[in-house]
Length: 247
Image (cartoon, rainbow, N blue to C red; front, side, top):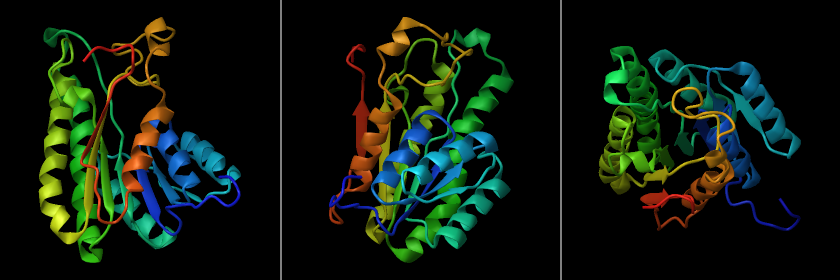
C-alpha cells in the first residue's frame, strides 16, 4: 500500500475459505492490502502458513485456522477463532471449491458427494454459523465465489453446474433475508481462471488454454470492489469472463 493511501478495510476482519492457493490466496493478499486482518481456512496447514507469511511480509496480520469445510465442527471452530483472536468477523468469503469435468456417465456417486459437499455443504455451514453473529451486529458482508457455471448449464459440467447453481440461489435467498438487518451478500461468478482448480479432473497442466484464462488476482479485485462499497450500496452479483471465452 503506497504511503498516504487510505486502507478502506482497516479495523475489519475477513475469514476466507480455500485460502491456501489460487483465488483464496489472492483474495487474502488483496483484502490485507486494504487493511483487513485475514483468517485463512483450508485443509493444508503448510500452504496456509505460506500465505500467512506473505500477508505478514506485506505488513498485514494473518491467522491460520485449518480445517475441512465439510465438517461442521471445523467450521464452527474457525468462525469462533476468528472472532476471538481477531476481534470480529466482518467479511466472510466462501471460496473453497472443487470440480470435475466429463460426461455424466463418467461420474460416480462418490464424485457427486465430493463436489456437492465441498461446494455447497461448506457454503451452507459457513453461512449458517456466521449469519447469527452478523445479524446480531447488524453489519457485515458475505461473499460467495461461485462460477458462470452457476448461471447456465455447460457441457460435461452437469454436477459442477448443479453445485454452483445451488450456491447462486442460496446467496440470492440470503440477500433477501439479510439486507433488512444491514448485512450484504454478494455472488462473484467468474469464468475460467488459471489456477490449480480441476487439474487432473478435467484440466491438464500446461494446457495453453490456461494462459488465456483470467488470473486469480482478477477475481480478488472483484471481491475487493464488492466489500469496499459505501455503507448504503451493495453489489449483488459480479459476472466475469476472460476475453478468450464467448458468452
